[in-house]
Structures are given as C-alpha cells and as structure tokens.
Image (cartoon, rainbow, N blue to C red; front, top):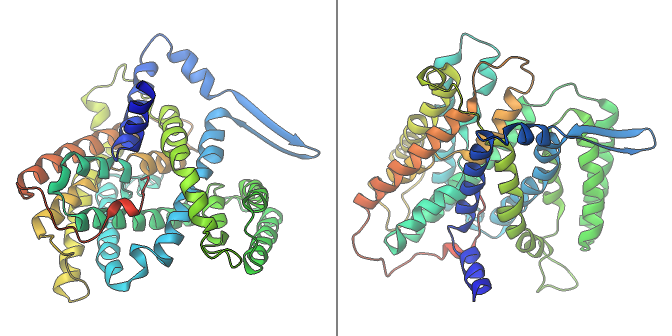
Length: 405
C-alpha cells in the first residue's frame, strides 16, 4: 500500500519539483545546524582517480558539479535533440515565439544584473546567473492550477525553458571556459570523430556510446572547456532511430531510463550540495549586496519584462503568433514563472565566482529569494486570470514530452 502510494507520488507532475525543493531546504537546515561542520567537510572530501600518469583530483563538491551533473546535461541534450527532430521544436511556427521570448528572458535579466555590478569586473562574471528557468519548479506551479491551464500554455513555458537551456549551454562554453589545453582538445576531437562514425554506421548499443562518452568527459575536464558539456555533445550522436528495428528509438529509450534517475537522485544531490546557505549573521545588508540583489531583481523583474516584451514585439512584428487558447494575461503569468531559476542559476553561480578567494556575498541568497518570489507571484497571478472552469479542449498533450527543468 505504502509502496503504491510512493509510486503514485513519483508519477505526479509536481514530484520532481517537490523532491528538489526538499533537498534544498534540507541543505539549508543542515548548514545552519550543529552538523554544519560535518556538512562542509563532507563536501570538501578529496577524491582521486589515477590511471598511470593520468589523474583527476577533486573534492566531492567538484565531482558532483563536474561529474554527476554531466548526466543531467546528457539528458538535456537528449531532450533537445528529440524536440528538434520530432517534438515541439520540429515545426518552425511553434518555435519562433518561445525562441524570441527566451532571448528576451536571458538578455533583460543580464541587463538588470549588470546595472548593479558593472563597475566591478569580478562581480560582472555573474551576469548569466539570472538567465535560466528551472522547468521542474515552473511546471510544478502550473500543475497546482490543475485543468484550468491550457495545454498550449504548458508547452509554451516548456519550450522557453528548452531555449534557455540552449542559451545556458552556449554561455557556459563561451564564457566559463579557460586555460585551454590543445592536447586535451585533440582527444576531444578524436572522441567526437569516433562518435560520429558510430552514429553514421548505426551503432545502437548504449554501452559503446557511454564508454566513449566517459573518455570524452575526461578529455573535456582536462581541456579547459567545462566538462558537463561533454554530456550535451554525447547526446547529439545518440541515434534517434534504429535502421534494423524501426520501432525502437535508442535516444528515447535512454531518455526514458534516465528521467527518474536525474529528477529524483542527481538533481536533489546537486541541490543538497549547493544550496546549503549559512544564515548566521545574514541581515538586510547581505540581501542588499549588489550581487544577490542584481540576481533577485533579474529573476523577479528582468525575466517577466524580457519574456513579455520580446513576445509582444514578435507578435506585433508578425514574426509569431500566440498559442491557441492563450491570451496575453496568461503569457504574462508564464513570464513571471520564468523567474524561477534554481538549478541552472546555482550551477552558473558556482562557475562564475569559483576563482574568488574572498567572497563577501552569497549569490545563492539572490537565486533562492528571486525564485521563491517569482513562483509565488506567478501562482497567485495565474490563479486570478485563468478560466474558473476546467478546460475540456486541449490542443496537445504535454505529458507526451517530459521536461526535467
């Protein structure tokens, strides 16, 4: 009985967001308890792997962020490839509006952040923190509103988040990579050629791709390009179809197998490791520091302004049109929810300020505060503007496409 109830909970649309939130809250509780020293020492536990002259030496937190999270990025890459080939992003008319909205939703928050931090080069490294949307939380809020939410509105939000992912991947590759090693990059190139040949000759065995993927990750780790991008690159070579067995899709099979692992194990571990903010001595001055303030306002104000403004311009210029059964009030509600930027914002924040020896601020305060307020405001606003009656006509079934962020 209990096991069946547990399975029912895990199958619910909100489950991933709830587990992720619980992991973040637990991290904050532990970080502010007598166990805080154990928590800190555990995350900085040194772990080494050595094979001959090749070695990787990092503490546990680094292994989680650069190692475990590569599986998350691998799943993101699989979703992106599927959506572009056979999903919501395969039709140009469905792509234009969320793509335009996502561009605005990344540019304007960055401008908000820069307005507070442009005078300090070190602080400006965090400009991309408020740019991403956490789809697990955002869709979880929409789920709370039940059948009143048009399916097209859910697809619109999920599509914006997908383009956010693409933008975040590009930003990480271009702005958060340094100290390039040409020798390691050569090995990256070799791995990519092997993966291309495997795809070209319709190799469908998952094990073969994973083995090359591990080598690709190790080469990326040593190359200076952020190692998690190896997951995205590997995903691009996973075959969508199997020529010998047309009814089988290797990509969709792997994606299905990874969904629960990423949603209920990897992302909660990441949240627990990265959201442990020590609140001792935290006051209004901590929240008003230009970094957390710029992040919070970027998420809370910059996101809805950017998404709404660019969406409106796209429609008025005739480049796109609103989804079926969706009006501007509902688009604005989704624009507010786009300010929930938990997972990728924490990830980029860790990259942006990793080199600072002294950090008189905690960017995570801005991320959590901005995301929390955006979720609450988005929920109450949409609760007011959505139809009071449950919708009977749905334009598509959003459950056909599972999104983890």
